[in-house]
Image (cartoon, rainbow, N blue to C red; front, side):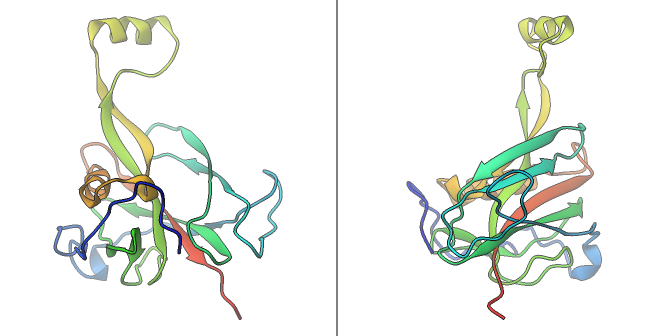
Length: 189
């Protein structure tokens, strides 16, 4: 596995000790899991034997009817795919820092598997209104801020605490679901 530049996640703190696992599988409410594959063009679904091509995915963001068009390089040195997992909040997740990556330590009800690498999570941050209309411009000048959703790049986090903060920002007063993107090695069968 490659370690992303400037990556400083250290220690073996499990999600359980950080309070991310709320209980056993009964606390999970999952929606269908979908596989997103690395492609050479937006319409192709060809998998590559080497990890030279970036992943290109579109993810529907929770809450606002927005989508994120994403393009990012793999972190695994083996052929891999992206697995999208959605959970209703509150949710549980077993991930821990390992070799500079956030690695799944227990299979989850949403489809994540032991060894999957958490690449992105939805996150909620305070920010100025988005848009180019008169109302959003006026609100920006008036200092009107609100919660906004984006996708947090886990592989570029400089501290494990930043990953935890992004995960726990997905709470019931802001959203009804969390979106997680995992990188999974392809089966060699």
